[in-house]
Length: 180
Image 1: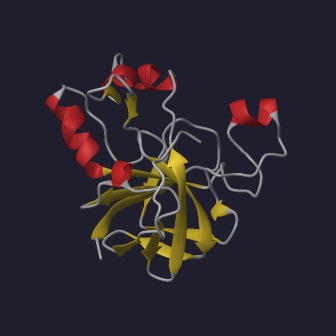
Image 2 (image 1 turned 135 degrees about the vertical axis):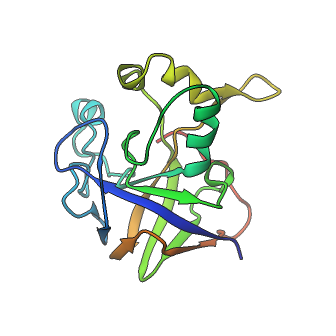
């Protein structure tokens, strides 16, 4: 069984690009991060609300691997936890390689992975060229999105820096993460 660790937690009560780091966040079953602007049963991301506000919120929790910050630092970008809008910064888990419907258990909380975050041009407002830096291509020329993964809260609870993350893979067949 794979395990990782929580490096940072963040939330923002308004639709800001980055989120404020804090000591702990509380996950609420079926809703997301308590006090975060993206909390809710239906979509809260403004672009998705415009299209159809009744869509289910598959983006209740945003997770990014801290290893991405190291990769970006090598490209001369300074990115800190919360800067890219994530709620949970992880270490030791290859988030982007997890299959859809993987469960991440953190304390009493359980998050079901729904898909990849689709990075947007707001990244370039943070730092010029950042959008391109979180995109790549595989050997077949397919787009790789590195800006984290999204999930829904199956069981609520507190998440703190230093908490262990246990990865539970879904039954096979496994399905690759797609943008949500």
